[in-house]
Length: 388
Ligand code: ATP
Ligand code: MG
Image (cartoon, rainbow, N blue to C red; front, side, top):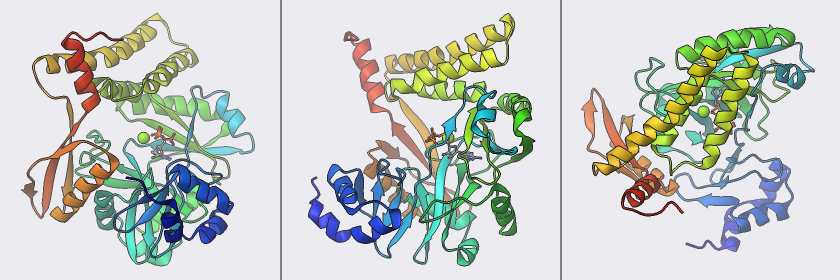
């Protein structure tokens, strides 16, 4: 379906967008032509940056009626070794703040007109996230601070994107890790943000403390070992004033869990998924000065995380089963489930929605996400097709 660019230009107030984002007009129309800036049908209608354009992050959303801009969430760089990376990166800070990196999906919640919307990383309004945001966060904070966007992780078993059950969460919870200005993306300081969240009764990610930059690597090593043994993902290390960009660092256990997941659907995940994760294990092992036994354990865990899920997948296919991922959502209104089904179609996700189950005043809807590429590839190879 080709969208007429001149129609899109009419729909979007290019001049206003250009001024607010400080991007020349011709770059915006160019982005529309290249579809880096795309129109997303739906309620509310919006444009989203599929990739970064100048200083506008990928995932930046431009709403049309009423006009509003919510900047995308910036990428967070990763370090593979704590020392001397932290000393180098945070050279202009005396201290750093360490917060837990939770493993869920990234959400920005903002007031657009008089409605609260839940945006996912790509800059889409997700109907499910929007219902949950209204439920969990509500309007109080935004009545007082309509120009701010709450950035946080949606975590729990009822997550259609990254379901996790080890946090002890019943359904889905929101944990704030950033408050930014909607249009500029400028962040509040860590402590100001945490105090505001406390004031409004909104959960924040766990705070481990503020450490001298020169000693942070020692503290973080201890924290990561603890987090890893509980299967938690890792930490994000931040400049207390949020002037420097944060840095993330993760546990081996969570790394291996990612691999186990990805290799179950090995042909649906890019090969790019694999290589950096092996590198992380190697650098961590050297930084921790592991002996033969510890390294042996790490090797075994890494190998098992790759081969076991893949073998399981091949056996499943051999037995005639379909390779799919089971996820679930819990909604107050079946209309939200319907809208979410449409939303997944828009994203090009192949999903089968099962009949809802009523639990209290909510509906639990199980969803099978079909990993078509892994299905096809496995079937073909088992049927005798050559690898290349
Ligand atoms: P990125 O594009 O930022 O590298 P990614 O999709 O590869 O992200 P991750 O490796 O999960 O994602 O790391 C960054 C993400 O971590 C953030 O986008 C955010 O959703 C999540 N996150 C969880 N906890 C925190 C936290 N305390 N501070 C900042 N981000 C956090
Ligand atoms: Mg994540």
